[in-house]
Length: 380
Image (cartoon, rainbow, N blue to C red; front, side, top):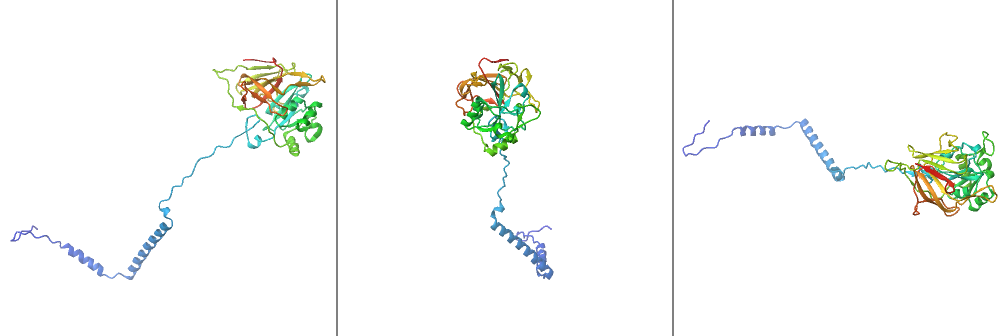
């Protein structure tokens, strides 16, 4: 309804009659006495609120950091595995094998001794003439452990010196008088079949004597442990990874010939670009391992150029393998001229470049032949 001014011209303020109604309702509500049940419910609610609040406050006081905990950071870094390599060959192996003592074994190479066992698994093989133009091998092992190797034959002084350079356990069957004397003089870790008999090797029935003496890693380890031959200390060749020929750097020595003594003992090598190794041929035939049937294929072929002669007994060979001389290194399909050095009977053999620094050889089997100068040829 429209308000009209009074006689004095003053406009009165409107009165809200609903305020009285709301106030009256509030007074009625306050005047009402709660029931006992309502008081209990109300009290329970208050007590619950008080308890929860007190517990929360206590927790915050006791563990204030839980109010704003630090983020938990879990590292996902995994350290790279430890890799072990054979000091003898540079081949990756396990820790135990990388610490095995070196074993050097005299392996026969007369026609009646072929094919041999264990040569394919050797880390390093030395080849030289024993007598009458007949070559013999010194097979050197570390991480590999053949179950069978032989036939085993007698020692010669130059083989003894090569074995001494590896502080090796030396397995042989007798030897020349000079070789046996040198073994004692140098304190070689001797494991002579002539002395230890069946404890180190046995004669097999499939071949006739003297081409039938064989042994195994297990038997060699057993005797060596009994004798205390459990470590080897030597200076290893420097090793590297393969570097296969390319179009810009092609192979320059794919066919190699070693004119050692005659048709039955001369050797050839054919470079295999797929494996970056050299397939060995002897007497015109692939030189295969008896047990595996596989062709021997070293990663590195070395010619040690040194003087060769006949002993005053007019039977045994003589090599000047102490001192230094030229070497020819075949690897990666190429040839490199180098220098071999063996400063003393017990010193490790070194292969150096023209500046006297170690020449890096590919990891894997290294086949080393002692040969006079002018008897190695090769073609691309």
